[in-house]
Amino acid sequence: MEKENNNLMEKIVSLCKRRGFIFPGSEIYGGLAGTYDWGHFGVALKNNIKQYWWKKFVDSRRDMYGIDAAILMRQEVWQASGHVAGFADPMIECEKCKEKYRTDQIVDKNKCEKCGGKLIEEKMFNMMFQTKVGASDDSSAISYLRPETAQGMFVNFKNTVDAFHPKLPFGMAQIGKAFRNEITPRDFIFRVREFEQMEIEYFTREEDWEKYFEYWKGEMLSWMEEVGIDMNKVHELEVLAEDRAHYSKRTVDFEFDYPFGKKELFGLAYRTDFDLANHKLDYIDEEKSEKITPHVIEPTFGVDRAVLAILLSSYFEDPEGKQEASNGAGEKEGRVYLKFKPSIAPVICAVSPLLKNKPELVEYANTKVFASLKAEFGRVMWDDNGNIGKRYRRQDEIGTPFCIVVDFDTLTDDTVTVRDRDTGEQERIKVSDLKNYIKEKIN
Ligand code: ATP
Image 1: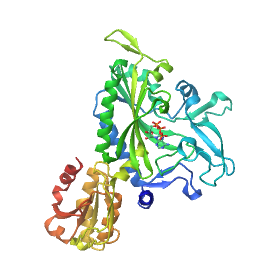
Image 2: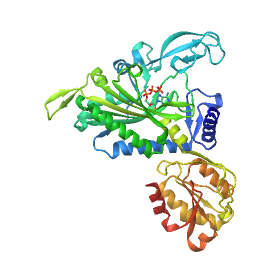
Image 3: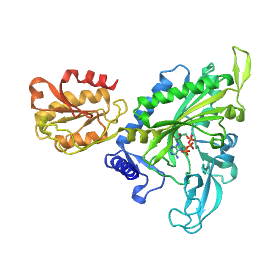
Image 4: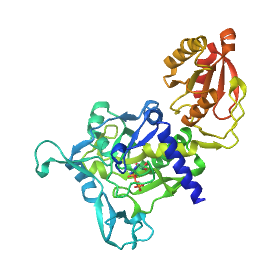
């Protein structure tokens, strides 16, 4: 079973590289641990996931305010938030080879996994990347790459209230990069040093926190299902007090069954009034004529872990393959496909002329099919490389829900073959109906 799971990760990492989703960072210089570069299809998938999140949690609501705060902030922000003093993991080092480990992540706390040497000197390691802003070298120039997007929202709480006069409860939402100098980055994009978060800070009166905690739990679960995360692999974990972050009075982690174990996917925390109080920010409730410090519920989603969970939930192998004889595409070998939801698939459909050396087919496919679908959906790919069977294989691995083929019949009856990724089945659809056909499938 363990071997199978390792194989699955290997297969996904290799597919992501081969098909242009995700590459190791700084690869031509030997790689930089904990960093990845996103290729064309990876960017598209990630953008679709982020857009879907923004649409659900910001655009379709009346009580949410977006923000895109600077990554660099004054050091006072991180002092007030408690990160300078407390955003640290326990670290242990090998006496012999100097390999470092996060103490809570290794099984044998005495023996080095790499060389068998003795592990010594447990100390706390602050995970924030420190930098200096400007040319000055004194300590007042110290800044940090943000380890969470949350503080960008808290420090703009007053700006948001002054600009929009929202009534409680209301939320702020942000999508952006976060950086953590993880001691042991591992498991592909699961634990990296540079990643993205989609976070909400939902401000409410203290007495309502439990109600909104439950509400956001439901919202998070429904989003996961909507983007195609396998809900049979998602589990809720009530985080014990001693394991909670310094600011939290209640945390529920949503864990996912990754091939390397059951680990955190997203989190939901009750941050109390910890952050607003430490930044000395308050809120005037005009209806009740009182000044209060709102309490905060924080649903947080890691984009990279979302991508990994979606890839793992979408990966299918069909050992028999599908016999797709029409159009000359006899597919008999096994196939691998990514069963992305059409709403988040990097490519919604690929358009092919049956033969690329037949100008009449190429002309028709290009001008009458590809151009109009591209203008409508954007996420449309021209694919005339190799025979039809090879194109289907490629599109399956990219997770393209529909492959559209223009053949000789098209020239006389204005219909095309639309081949379904999941079933391998093919239908003839009128060219004039294509847009509506795809729109219906996306929705
Ligand atoms: P872990 O216990 O796995 O280190 P955490 O509890 O420190 O995670 P949070 O501080 O709750 O994580 O961060 C919010 C979200 O950001 C996580 O649920 C996860 O999706 C994502 N995240 C956190 N650290 C990383 C990382 N190093 N790489 C990728 N995503 C991360």
